[in-house]
Image 1 (cartoon, rainbow, N blue to C red):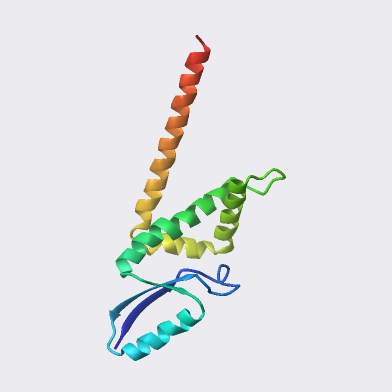
Image 2 (image 1 turned 135 degrees about the horizontal axis):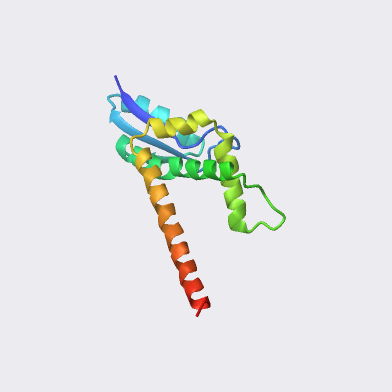
Amino acid sequence: MDVLCTHPMFGPESGKNGWKDLPLVYEKVRVRNETRCSSFLHIFESEGCRMVEMSCEEHDKVAARSQFLSHSIGRILAEMGIESTSMNTKSFETLVKLKESATNDSFDLFSGLFIHNRFAQQELMNLEQSFEKVKQRLLKKMSEQQSLSSV
């Protein structure tokens, strides 16, 4: 029996206009029939997927950092209720698109990224700690400015 782990790093929304340049991650865990394995992978390659060979463990680490983190930030932006405005900057448009992309996927998919990836909880803690560091820097700067103003 062959074991080939695959994960198309896209879903119905991002792949709706084709798979060109979208990543398909795979690991040949145990492949005895190389012809069959190559034929299967060729299906994705012929559709234009960017083929990325990596271990399952490395995939989970990278997915927690990229996929779970982007979904988390998108969900946070949705909770904040951000919407497009008449004076959007390019960076704000990017945030609105991130929110829309994250909320186009089900909450079950999002929670699955958290529950079934042992590296996701650490990324959530990193996000929280990083937010707190930025917040503290801002508050410190504000305090410094207020001290200068009162002199």
